[in-house]
Every structure is written in C-alpha cells, then in structure tokens.
Image: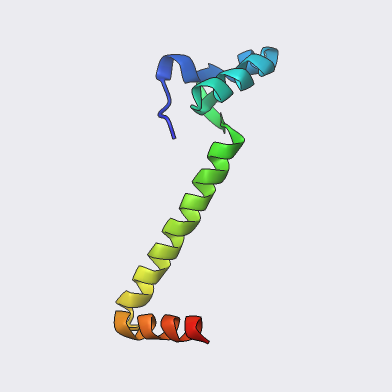
Length: 93
C-alpha cells in the first residue's frame, strides 16, 4: 500500500462531506488511503476497496504465521519431514 502523503491525504471530515466524489476519485487515482480528521484528530481512514481486501488477506496470512510460531514454541508443532510425508501421502491417495 502506498504511504500517506501528509499534505495531500489528511483532510478534515467537513471538507470530505462537501466533496465526497473528488476524494473517492483521489483515492482511486493515487491508490493511497485518506485520513479524515475531526477537531484536529484522526477519526477515520478511507481507502480503495481492493487495497483493503488485499491488506486483509495479508493480515490473515500473518496471523496464521504468528499462530504457527506460537504452536511451535509450545511444542505443538510437528517436524518438517513428518509434515511433508503426511502431505505427500494425502496427495497420492
């Protein structure tokens, strides 16, 4: 995901309400998220739907990796060779 450009991508909520279409166009064209503020504080992030979906998929993968690392640390994992044999056995059936 492209990084937020402070000058262009942080806007007050009141400005967003007045120009929704132009902000959606900006997000689509730049592929950068837009940070909306209210009373000078960040309140929401608006981003391209496909970028959001991609981010969610990556997060799911990272959570799976984190969970697997925790399982290995507590001795719940199985050795690589044993996992490989089980997978190959399942494929050949």
